[in-house]
Image (cartoon, rainbow, N blue to C red):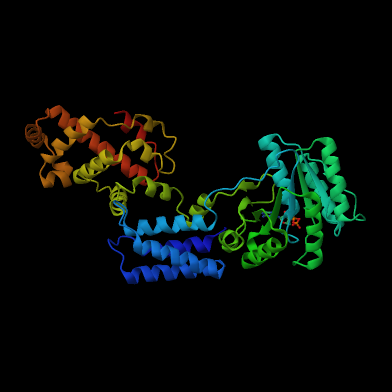
Length: 444
Ligand code: GDP
């Protein structure tokens, strides 16, 4: 799987900080060293790594202690934000011509995935915008390249303009563009030749095509599996052609991550799409933030951090998870949780972020009246420490005493204890991955 090694190493680097109330100079140094090694091993460009580590360190040292976030969470947050920034912050859309057709010139080394990706992008536009693209076969050096484009065209039902292998590619492009004009195509893809390495002759040919066609987008296609080489390739093409966008292919393979993390920083050019398979539908818009959380491998945990950064503390959450698992959740925890919930706002929002919970119908009723909460708290405050930690001892006479102490009717005390027991059961089930018990609990 893509990024596997990098994800694991980054997580390990940060795991060591977990549970620490304070991060010492030495802890930070160790963590930063591991992050640096993880990135270098993933084949991220050396200068990019250096800048990255420097920024994260500065931010980590200078960071105000954010209320509610423990140090490990703060570092995760900073690393996530900096990974996102390194990859360009936000998605960058396809350039469009003010007047049709938009001309997209596909360039890249042989085997990078130019032809396939031209097809994918044409298909994407067709599906998304009902577009009517035309593809021009301008790779005259490999007859198979033309056949391949024609096959792709048939597959996605997009016309291909070709003149065999005996005409100069610039002339083919000229006639292809005239044909697009005639047929009112709204997008034109120029599939150019590639080589195994960058060479002058090829670059000159591409420069001539660029000069004739004035493309709105010069899309460089690079193979993510080639790591540092992908970055060097990108630099080479960019120096000569001033590309406008990058498509990273083969992210479905076991790429280490170097290309994804370096290209933007090294070339200044945005990654606009990523290819994640051989099928025509395997193309996605590149979202730097989503890619960062994918690399970190913490997905929803990051949104949870964001959501709870003010009110929550990871240590407590971890303890709670443990308690849920061990079934040792007691009235003291119950009280803590209620206080958290009161600070945090609607519990259903938070619950929805737990994988598998988003569509649980039980959440529709997961509301609590603040007045009820105060009553429940009063009841718990009237319990002895033993009663809070060992709820099983709550016999009828103890319940009557608690009712008198809290000023609540004994029926209410009974109901609350029953709800507590149901909640405890539910938490234990949720912690084991079984959500079906929720419905009954929430409707009570
Ligand atoms: P070109 O020489 O640059 O035109 O490259 P091709 O389009 O012929 O692609 C080379 C090979 O890479 C083909 O076998 C494609 O099916 C494959 N390929 C292209 N993009 C992807 C991708 O995103 N994932 C995978 N797994 N294979 C891809």
